[in-house]
Length: 236
Image (tube, rainbow, N blue to C red; front, side, top):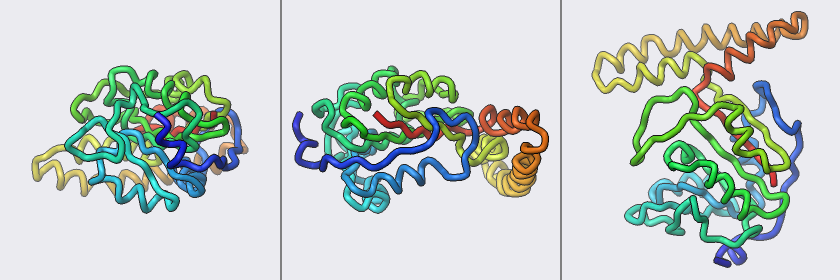
């Protein structure tokens, strides 16, 4: 239970910004999380074992500890995200990407992350919204920005950002998900022109929103209601 007391230093990075960001921000929250999580080791919940930990070790210079329930994957720590095997208040940073949809009680995972975080500790979540069904081994849920705000309501600060691919990326994910050669070809032919057209429309909305505030609602719909998922950065 006291494993992370030795693995982690008690050092907290700063956390700024609004309590809940309901608009697309220029700075990608995942990149911000990576920049914040450089002073201490990071607990990666749902790491899928040592085979996928190499890129986390690159992302987090101070080191990463992987926890997963899959024993054959040989994670650093074998454990269940619903019952994190660490003392309360012992972990400075938690990274939890594309896991919550695969557990039957995602609220309990968020509550466990809250419990083990130090005061001032921070966590990053990525959750899918409009995203194809994918078993690993099960796929239970999709999440809205309001749903994530509710799940993370006990944290002192919450920042939520739509994933960057927007509607075009969502549409092409489904198309590109076809395993047939025809599906792959169509995906490549349509994905990039569609993306640049919609990205241009979004940029125009950003440019005009200061002059026409009513366009903000359109811009919100463009990204928040038609995105593949959400990046969430929270502070205890």
